[in-house]
Image (tube, rainbow, N blue to C red; front, side):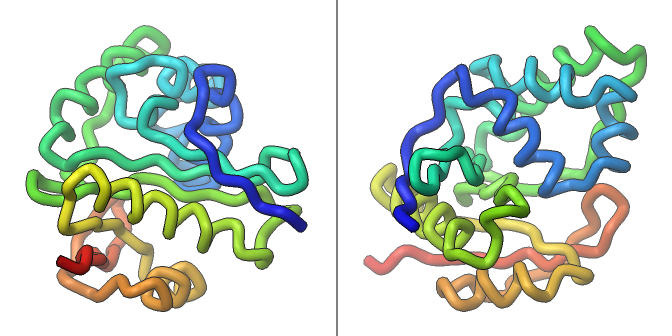
Length: 186
C-alpha cells in the first residue's frame, strides 16, 4: 500500500470534518455543534479563518483513496481561529460552548489526527504526524504539542515513538489529557 501525504484542499472539507469526529468522538461533536454536526464541521473546514480549516491540514491517501488527515496551527493564533470557528457554529446553534484552551503561543499545536477505520494500523497516522511535525519545523516552530486522552494509550504510544514527551496534564472537552511535546532538533 502506497501512502501519499498532501496539503488539504477546500474540497477535502467533508473528509476533514470526519477526521475531527474520529478525534473527538460523535458525542462531543453533537454537544458542541448540534445534531447536524457534520454539516457544521464541513462548513468550518471549508472556511479559512478557523481552527479546522483545510488551510491547516494535511491529507493522507492510500493507493489514491482518502484515508486520514491531520490539522495543526500556530498556538499563538488560537483565539482568532477559535472565534472564526465559533462564529460558524453560532450560525447553526444558538449557544456555542467554549472549550478550555488547548494550546498557547510558542507551540505549533496538532489539533486533530484521524485515520479512517479501514486504514488504521498501516502507518497512516505515523506518516501524517511526522509530516506535520516536519512542516511545523520548516515554518520555524521548535515545539509541537498535542493532547492525548488518558483513555487512549495506543495513540500515546504512537506519539512517544515519534519523540513526543509528556509535559503536563490538562482538562479538555471534560477529559483529563496528557500534553505531549515534540521538540525540533536545532
